[in-house]
Image (cartoon, rainbow, N blue to C red; front, top):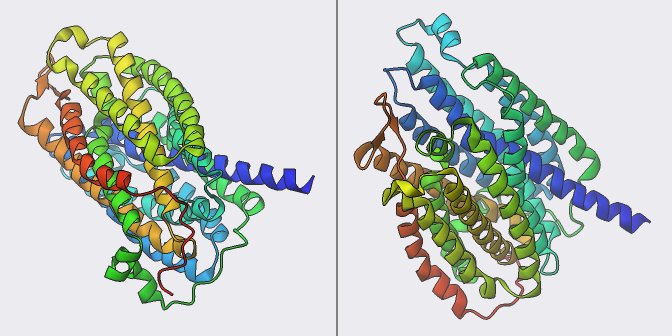
Length: 447
């Protein structure tokens, strides 16, 4: 009975913090972008596409630095639970603040002339604050905890469950936003308030369902040594495969971030789905989520090396299909878009599940927290800096489409560029495939 109760708490913690965390990140990475675009698109002082690109890059920097510092600190303390629970509670409070941000409120403080520019600056700062606490609770805390409590037997299925959390989160958010008018600021205020309360409640629940791994011990290494650990040659030599897999993840993530911040706006404006994009997303997410879970179980039965290449191929095919409207208006319809989006998102999840599982397997158990910051540099900081920048350049320089009222909209070229970037993944993947597959429970590198 005690074993069943412990197992139930284990899966409850995995699901709750993965789902709620991804609801918060999805709002930041997609819907906060849409919120900013809707709020600033009529303003002449600022360009919302540029604001989004800056916002994504700065928040990625904050997340990485936070994870480096807090990851090292949690290793030294030998604790994850307290960082996760408290991090989520304050994270929720920071999200509620978003509901106060709008051009009207900025005008009251900074004056009408400077209102738009002030609002753009405030959203970047607020996004960084949210990311800071999200980095403590989710990136540094929860991700390290997952690595602590998983192994070769359950790593694939756990990673599969985690990988569908963003899609499940998107479904929940889409269901909520169907009933709100996104042009009414008050609706956005209630949206952020409700989300913030949910995230804070998850933090409270964490005190009851989370348990630190019994194998987690205090790391007595000096804090500065812990902080700089992942940048040393000795660490690289001893954990070479971790860095090779991370470089593959970097290529994949850069390709994804070229289009991801602008995906909803693209579907609404270029494909002209308007609010019907939620239905298209729902179908694509549902199918991709099922595929991801099945794929995660396959990873557990086989090996990441055997399943990686098919996942990459499916993802690239999906990207190419999403780019086909460049060739003909025939492909610019709801049915084709739904099919292409489903294939692309399924491939995206499969690649993420595969590379994520490999990164966890290659992480030394005694230095999990110290490796979270390094992981974030390759999987978030660089991708979320380079990807949106590339996407923004594409949108501002070439093949920009215009609607009848001459407002700029997005172009399918972003998906083609993403597919071309994926060609670079051949190099690290070839190195991965040359290595024999084995479980890596190696001793800490700092010893």
